Image 1 (cartoon, rainbow, N blue to C red):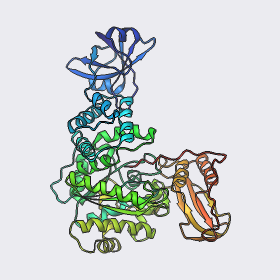
Image 2: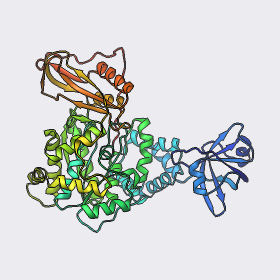
Image 3: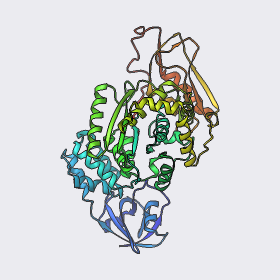
Image 4: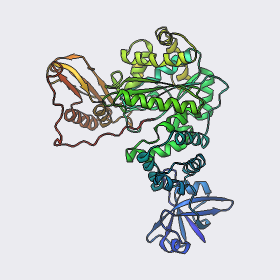
Length: 514
């Protein structure tokens, strides 16, 4: 059937979508969520059908992604015919029945995911089945390999290739901004790709963007790494394991994360990593609540690393409070820069040198943590970070005070004397986001007290920064309601933390970070 193209000038998040009127859909024998093959001149694509009431007869509505791939203009005539369902759908149905998938079946699913042959409903069904039934290590390995093979890879004529990654879960974790230059300054290659925030107040890419551009291509990334030994770039611009980005779009609204292992490890494999340290923050408010859970996850990462030809070690780190004092992109960039200059919070420097030390020892250096500390204290790591900033297009002479933060500021003070006995990572993240982070780079908060600190009534517990007054007011009100920092004169004085149900019921935050 020949139909006239109607360009809708609407994006569909990358999916190939075509709209048909009821009469034309009936003539083709298709319903909503079925597929049609659209051919214009020498180009053809398969698109998912949406059937619309009162849509112009004899026309096919094309979203931007579809019209761009076909290189078709408004009113051009295209051939439209019913298309068969992807073979991978039968494999998704098998997983819904809790059947184990073979390597070739997983490859077919990932290929169709990347080529946008599957609808959001079908992807949701697949990920939900993985969440309910779990994955065998064989399936995880196959997923990881297929995700690498369907994307771009970084080929460097250097070995070894080192990398560090955190599973996320605690606010303010700006460790990578220190670890990368320490490793690069030691003479090793560390091409660090990072995520933007999905559910947190800042991802590593958001923090680094306050120092230099992060939207580099694979070719630009390679140039930076060959020049400086390291980089800090946004992975989303590189098309490394692109299936993962599509899975995240589904996982976030469903509040599930069945792809944690293949998601992280496929991207490490795509950059050619040979030695990887994984940071697993553990404790109340972190993803991993207990040391036992963290150990089990670490064993899976190490096993998967062996299967993919990577040497993997895991560091189980303290995750019961934010790292450092700053939460929010610009504030965290300031703090990381201060730390590498020689100031900054002790816990940030300790964690960064510990993880960097693990990597250095994996490649044969003795006393890795001591070496990392020397590179930090001597200023060599700082000079390397400035080299990386310059190579990525930033100002190598940037100072912490040069990084702009929100000019609207408010404080939360202690309502009594006491010791800080607990902090809520989740509530601190909520407050920073309410202030505007990560969209507003200058928004966030600074903690003025940490676990174990003694405070006096009226003393500032945290400062909130925003770029807009309404955002600041909203964040201050939320902080007053949530009370994210728990005080007591001594342990045991306050045993009742919260009453359930309370007047306001807060939905638990789902943390998804890559």
